[in-house]
Length: 129
Image 1 (cartoon, rainbow, N blue to C red):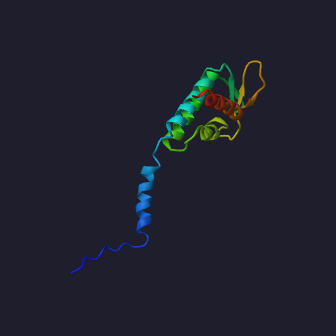
Image 2: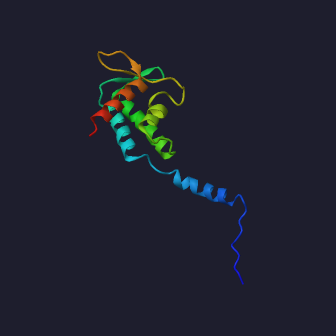
Image 3: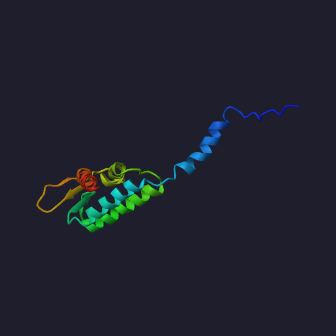
């Protein structure tokens, strides 16, 4: 007697894939991205610049805490895989009001925070061995 292979419905592979997706998507950002994001947050915190969000200026240390909190939120939801995504999703505008963030450094013009963070990211990458 020949054994017959089990027959599965056509939708079975999709169901199997759907049950695995949550496990696959819980991966942390690559080490390089985590390093870059940590450096961006630290650089802002030690910059001596002011950070504007929702119409109010905050010292660099408070800005660091705020962006770290937003980054932690994104990490828990697996919503950030790169420094660029961090800048876009946490560092450029308020998630509550949608207003753009700005950075004001002594002796320099005020710039959008996405521009400031992007310039720091470029510096980090050019300094890397």
